[in-house]
Amino acid sequence: MDAQPLYATAAARDRIAQLIGQGGNGGGGRNVNETDFKLDVAVAKITGTETGGGVYKGVLCGGLVGNISRSSNLSLPGNLIVPSSDNLTIVYFREAGTAQHGIRTNSYALVALADVDANGRRLAYVIQANASQVFAVTVTQTGGSNGSKTSAASYTYTVKTLDGTTIGTSVALAKTRPYGLVTAGSSYGLAFYDGTTLKLWDAGEYPGSGGC
Image 1 (tube, helix red, strand yellow):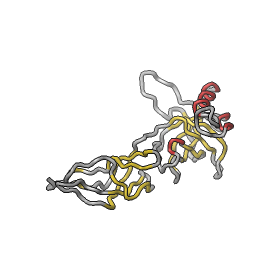
Image 2 (tube, rainbow, N blue to C red):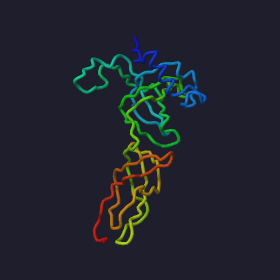
Image 3 (cartoon, helix red, strand yellow):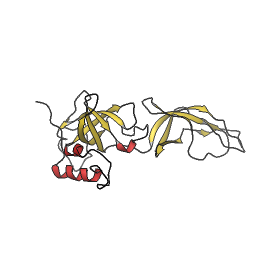
Image 4 (cartoon, rainbow, N blue to C red):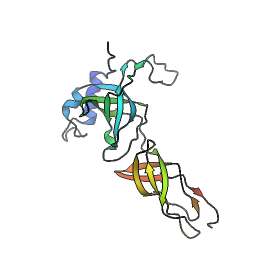
């Protein structure tokens, strides 16, 4: 017998639908097809990212989390049944219009189940997930120049997600650099989105010598 998804109660489902908004302007939420939230809320595991920002691969979990101890940290998956093959396309509305994938792979999310997508996978909308607004990236310096005692460096970078997807080219550092020589970053950095604009906050630069 197939594992049954771990569902929220009807009352919780109704409250979630109210908070997200069931279409139109009256609910104050996103304009999502009302029938989507007459379906079920379940636990999903994020297994990877799709090419488009805000879209993920995942699996629908079944069973129970397991015995919960009030004296120790919650540990997942517990007794959850986690299928080995992806069966969900998971959508995170907060990343709409960006190339971001801020939800951690192999983490668990509370999702609202909807219809199947064009590829035959069940659609799921993220309600709550382990997502970061500031996220790790890799950086490669591709432009700009070093600083001096009278000017700041102007290095720019190609920025990629940790899975290798390019999300920005010729991206300048968002924070102000001091005057002087610096060594350009060449590995990891930190970025975030301001609306749909990628901002590179840290490129792993560090002070050089002889610039003052």
